[in-house]
Length: 325
Image (cartoon, rainbow, N blue to C red):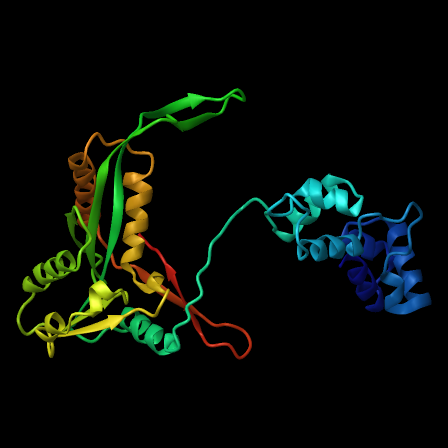
């Protein structure tokens, strides 16, 4: 940029000393780039080849690293790591790590994914996301699901100082189990309020009883939309579904796509804030912790925001959850 400014100022007819003063550079610098431009044009503003040993770890090395990661790992290993890549390529492990960091690749970090095989995925997903983004006027939209088998684990925890001087939270390696609880939850999409019920088991009758209780609290003429996953415990009961015909419309998430159910965000918050690392001597303490979290959540509840962004090319517009509290 500086070289271009020198050339542009010179083309305006300014003296060398004036250009140097305005741009804060030396007179020889201005003279150098004026002469280079006069001899070779724009090509003269580029850096000339520098002397010295050619780079070993260049773009070709980067390509070799990335290509190797596409190959099966060495025998006895489930995945590649830095030393294994370096040994295979006969290079420095630090050079491999620099490439991985620059490319944003973390070989030890794990993520899981799920691909829906539902042939009607697009239409079902659009129907549910449409309820989040543009619900019917004056309608109640409920996102309903259960969080099963939450363990009441008794395990002491605290803060300890490591050898490096860092203070971290620690959990005792041994623990006791005191049974499990099942949590049913219904999130009011428009307000963020959550209705819950804990049970000892996850049965169809328990789910139906919970939802019956939530719906009984609504006015008889209230239009209601209920989003649930497609488990058989939810949908294979024509008699129970029939009693809500004309009043409640059920929307079932596509196969292997329960993540579309917004109440899963509440379960994630519950797990992170109230359950992970906690210690419970019995199921009653676990139940009290869940109820305390839900009470606190409802005191400041807000609807979760859904944002949509444009995707380049001919792809359809994606919809993503963005939690805003």
